[in-house]
Length: 204
Image 1 (cartoon, rainbow, N blue to C red):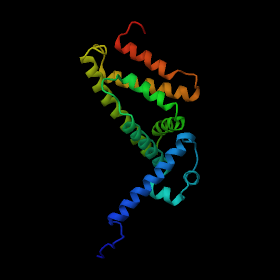
Image 2: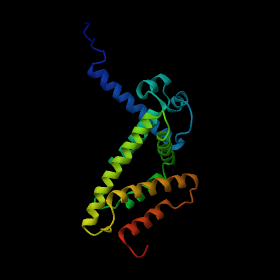
Image 3: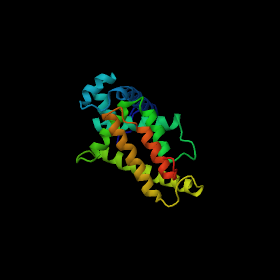
Image 4: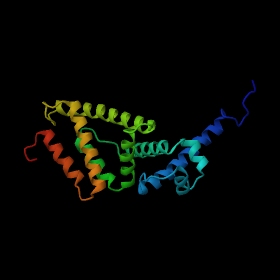
């Protein structure tokens, strides 16, 4: 068996350069998709927009769908790092803040909706894994937050936390889709009203 060369697949330097190159491509792709969304087109056409070769995109991401998933996950990770969610914020309020921020990046909102729609179709394993994992994670995290808020009297105690989390996600995604189709839809106000209803606020 031949030993790997110094610049072979196991070379730390080459591995680090590969990670850096992938991140560089991803940074450019996020800029492109933030404005263009996930318009149906080829990986080759996107490579031209991003400013890299088709071979580079194929090497680092494999397929268009895998690229879209990577772009959304990275943009979401950056948002979490730059603007962490403050403790004590209700699930509906969390989604309302997110909706306000999303008005500045309609392309990424459209990309997300495209991935969720693709997850419902056969042959889209990357989108399916992304969507099911994301929904499951959000339901668990939100249900835990609902329980915390119920304990301190900020949300109605008679509500099932798991159902509340599923409802808030459904409301947010549905309103987001309506906003993409009709920008006059007041996504934030509807979520604020839902928040008041969950809190038992008679002013809603």
